[in-house]
Length: 285
Image (cartoon, rainbow, N blue to C red; front, side, top):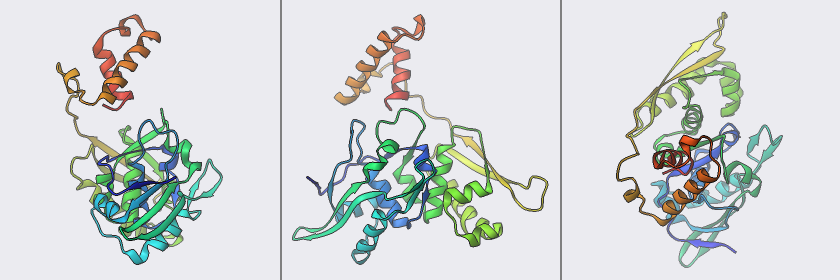
């Protein structure tokens, strides 16, 4: 049974496995926007993908842009087609198992559901995942800019990310014409994307890259260098008072209990500051 949604949540954080981040997406920018927007509706405790009846007006509100009603059918066809290739899966699959436009008196709705085959890449992720901010993605124009941002975000834990050009081409699923001529790829894909990413507000890092020719005339590898921005400290004396939601309070207490039952070292057994630090990292405070 579908859950009718006339107003989407205000959640902006997307959590996906690194394998899904590196997958080849053969879809348009509009389809990528809707898929990533849909991922923000996944709650931390979800164990399956829900069926949604989402008002198109609600999607437009969250995306901050209008959707051409005439293009919805082709958008649904793209989302339910085998348009994402996961190397470890071994074949191309669909992002959504269902996507259908429904016209009702109350407006236009999308009956949509994320493909259950993507469950291992999206639910109950404990490690090997990337967190994305939907606002950052929507602020970027162009499919390749969004995909390059996703990849840069995945490797932002490093000070330097070295990637072979052929590997980057594969991640981005760029056409052969770009692969044959790096200067085309650089001028039409890479440079515009990096310029946009550098202009993002409230970002965690700045980025620059150099070209590595590996002793030949052609560029063989790109070296992305991160400049990290200092984050404000989240641990304060009044930390407990800031846990406003019962959900976070409950998660914190469960974490403390887990630490007591699974001591790594005596000094980590009871102090609240260690529980707080672990809580921020594992629970996402």
